[in-house]
Amino acid sequence: MSAHTPHANGHEGLGPLASRYVTVEELPWQPTRFPGIDMKVLLKDEESGLLTALFRWAPGSKLPLHEHVEIEQSYVLEGSFRDEQGVCRAGDYVWRPAGSRHEAWSEEGCLLLAFFLKPNRFLDREAGG
Image (cartoon, rainbow, N blue to C red; front, side, top):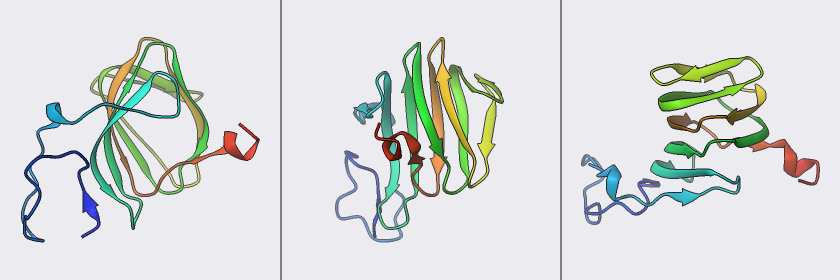
């Protein structure tokens, strides 16, 4: 099985159909390549590109222009983040269609749960960034 939770304890030796309980507090925060944005990977499938993760955005952090290759979903647990189309605050949920493009940022910082069917395509790399 290619789906797994990196750094999760107690998953070794589980059968292919066993539930995988995750103590999220024990998972490490990992830096992304974007300053001020860290993540805890809850579920990752390298083969399909599926990713479920908690993201912690520091105040003033920004995600550069990117495209959602498939549907992306975000639920804000604390704080808020925004893009050109609106703001998503604690308790709010936003989803974006495949092919949508935007930048996102957080003035106050936020904690959000995000679901990706495929990884984002960051357009700053294509422009030499």
